[in-house]
Length: 92
Image (cartoon, rainbow, N blue to C red):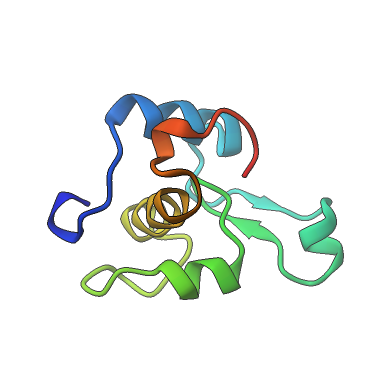
């Protein structure tokens, strides 16, 4: 993340991972509005495919279930929207 200028700390990542997926990299949300609309949230930080594609970071696998790719894409999105994953205290 640092190499790509994406802010965030272990504490911010851990807090959000535990809330979003309980640490399961294969978690998928099949019940919320995103799932109803055909784009379920996936992975450690529960990123939908369009968000993953928009915030995916080159050099990581192009797979929303890959832990590193999911974390970096989600943290990149959170940085763009909230300034840092550290500023996210609820579903984003």
